[in-house]
Image 1 (cartoon, rainbow, N blue to C red):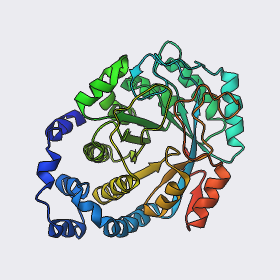
Image 2 (cartoon, one colour; image 1 turned 180 degrees about the vertical axis):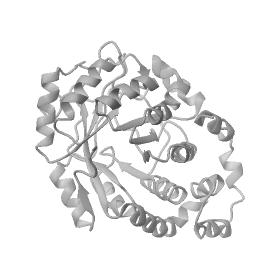
Image 3 (cartoon, helix red, strand yellow; image 1 turned 90 degrees about the vertical axis):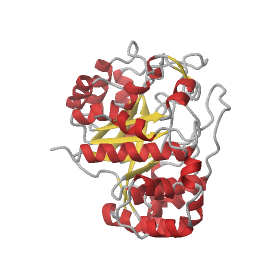
Length: 367
């Protein structure tokens, strides 16, 4: 059984109807439980549970400290290409958008790697658009081999691969996969993915599991918050993480909570997601999956990211640019979206220290 069967079981849940009769007593009982089921998780994501944020935070903070301590891993993304054949309504790389298209040579990738490595970071996230013509798997493999000379951990955030292709990039040195379903709801998914291979909902949905079968070490998933009701998407993300964790116990599973940011092109059909909503998702997910990793990117503002540190964040990006070759080039016309937190690695590191936590540049090494 794949996760699609789990998705099918819960996809038609009427959030409003299920949660309308929830009482304060119900929520308080859940907060005193050690192990939560899917409907407990659903309850903690409800609007009625939002007034219990402080109580949720107190318990979630204890669980995060127990499983992760005060360590926060730092990483930065490296965009090596922005060619894309998809028409995604919310993305700056949309094939119809008039942006400067660019693909780095291996020499340019090495210069980017050298520049980033000088900051002390040992974790890198490699990104491309979706174009197998311009960035085939062979190009990804060649790039990874260069990056492994400078970084202990290489995560990819590229187009979905087959199981065999995941094995190929893993053999080259990839140890992590980040892939967002964007939106779990099939109807909304079809609406915002107008054309291109990304329109295949099921193929993307199964990608994390194909990587797990290929013996990836870490998988990071999530939904792009704002494309649909955030509670439904957070619920499905949690179920997906729980499914992967239960089936592949040797894989480190984490979630991200990306919100839509301004980008080239126009997409106005956005559901509002507040800072408080992000916090509620974080806390409810931590209570549902005690040892889940939680990643907060520079899509969020500096002050908000700082305030999230004690609430159970385990990974943060720093020194970020979303432009192709942006670490060594001043050309920003190739950016995927605008970032909110423009701090350097050093500045993010100091912010973590100020809150009594420890920035980690390297958390493990392949033997």
